[in-house]
Length: 130
Image (cartoon, rainbow, N blue to C red; front, side, top):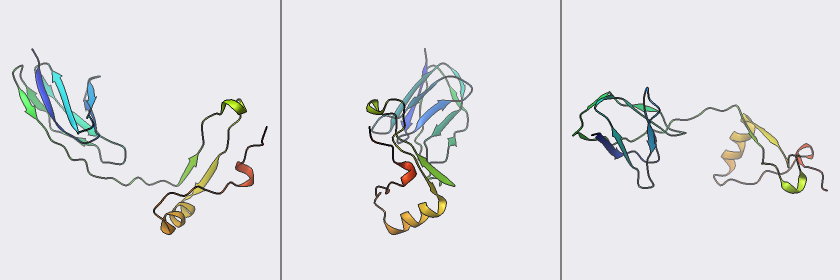
């Protein structure tokens, strides 16, 4: 018989360290892990948030342990962003377009508006028409 570790961890991926076990929080932030008796350490993560490891939890077969986790936002520093669309069936193996933005372009763009705007095509980023 297994014990249960459950709780709230909004949008998080939950991994049982040193195993291949884990789960993902549902749309309401709930997660459930049914594990055999033992000492288990959980890691909670989400892109854009600091990963959080809990202290090991001693679980017995009749245990029901609740862990609520609130991940903290963590800024990610990037030097540039490259946006490349997927392949288009009409164009075969050719890429549609590709554009690279420098750190300065990203900062000046985000300073002007908080709403994402389409980028103007550059001559080198437009695929030839068929």
